[in-house]
Structures are given as structure tokens and as C-alpha cells.
Image (cartoon, rainbow, N blue to C red; front, side, top):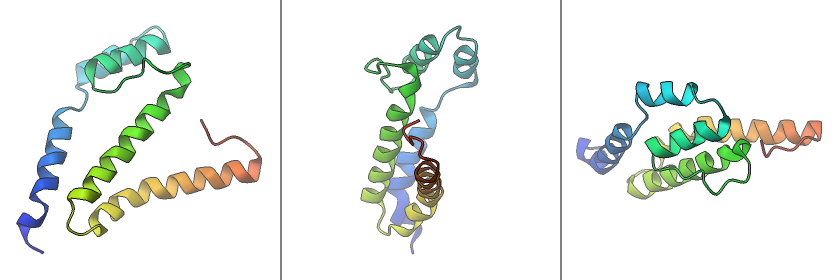
Length: 111
């Protein structure tokens, strides 16, 4: 494996790092008086659109779709899927564990 094989992926991830919330953004979100206001603050500080949610508790739908899109983009750019698989494994295992727990307890795994 050459260092240049993953140059596109590294550049993409560095751009994503620059878009992460700052400490000031997080402080504003934590200080928000309502969940709706917290989501509005996150939407203002990022590219995520929470305006279509019927309930603030559905925020995980937006975050999950963003996560899926990021991993899909990384798989597309990566010449070998193994490094992406290694990073994604943590999330896949958690999702499997949550689905199994929901099935065994009869609860909804929708969050």
C-alpha cells in the first residue's frame, strides 16, 4: 500500500474535521432552553437540516443518514474497503446489539 492510495480519503476527512462544531457552538447548544432550540442551534452551526422533523426526539434520523452518507463516500473513495470496514465495525456492532436487544425485549429500536 502506498501513502498516496488514500490521499483523497484523507483530504475528505480533513474537510469534515473543519466542519465539526466548535466549543462555542457546543456551549450554545448545551445552554439552549428547549430541545427545539438546541436542534436549531445545531442546524445553524452545521449543514444538518432538522427542520423536517415532527418531533425533536427524531434527531437521530438526521444523524444516521449523515453517517451512512459519510461511510458510503469513504467506501467509494477507498481503493480497499478494509480500512473503512474497521472504522465502521464499531457502529455496525452497536446497531446489531441494539436491534437484538429490541427484539428480545419486544421494544422498538427506533429511538
